[in-house]
Length: 419
RNA sequence: GUGAUCGUAGCUCAGUUCGGUUAGAGCACCUGGUUGUGGUCCAGGAUGUCGGGGGUUCAAAUCCCCUCGGUCACCCCA
Image (cartoon, rainbow, N blue to C red; front, side):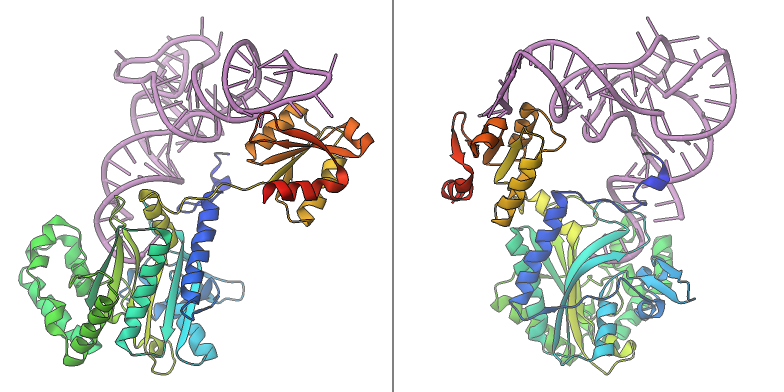
């Protein structure tokens, strides 16, 4: 059991009931919210040609050092998806559905990194992508849907942080300014940030190291580098959110780790649990990505929400608890088990949630299992009942409620008492 | 990849400081009290490569080294 080879690989885990049920329900709630808005599901492969992800940018850690890539038996260089936006965009280019294409997805992603609270090597996300629309109000719709989803789960301590990264040109100007700012005081910057500065200056703003704090707060703000168009877009996004009464705060330091974001970038933070990884969802606009992946010039917006982290937030806020497993009838058979076999089949076919015991256990043991199953009624069959073509119907919620009924009326009797 | 910390029954943990009889507790599980009846109660029972490997020692869960895994933080992100 402790043999390494018979344990879930590092950073992965088995999700058993009731957690598995919460995962499933969470996905169902999400599907409901986005279906109501006209989104349709897309299911893409869990692996792609590695180039699909490499197009996300060589400065992105997710592709630079966290990718699970491998060669298949045909010599193809493939990678397990670290996120799904690239796959969805690739699928868009391959099939060219009519725009606007509003797609939603769910499923596992893979990143090779050290695990910690709210972070695993295999983790699942739900998300949406819209391709073919430039309208800033779509950015608003996208955020509003995520917001609505969190609300449906019962989460209250979610904060929306918003920023604009401007157009590619705005952004490059900003990066130059940042580079200048940090280079001036290079020695004051932490060693790690100095390295980051070379690879991706924007990301320095993300540093959590105390040493960097004052330099970062003195850094130029992205908002001062927005072109007129970008500023207009950003203003409309904010007006849209205001009109829907969705609270948000502008965070000019919000840069996000995927490098393809343009203009709108946002993140949902849970304030309910204590961990470094408290971003439960994030996204933004990525005009240009479709082109980068070989498609026609097409704007895009979307977000991804981490299933595991969102459930962590639900735990912390004590919401979205699982309902009890609802067995209605438990068949107790002390004649060998054949009667239970027939009865459970009959009752299940009739729509009753039915369970039973196995291995010809004692009546006491079977009753114990009936109790533990949460069943409301037990149907008891012994030799006497078989001979007289009856069963005993026992109400497990009471200590005494028990009656002998004929076999033909079992369903009728149950229905009367259950509904 | 870096640092800290932990790893004893299915679960939660005691025992590790200062090595020393067959390694314990609670919960859960099983059987019986109740030869046809659960949830309460009582009695009994089963369960451990003390994460793994190596070393020191007359003797290791306990000390040392290595390794694997968990947790937390950095990095990064959902």
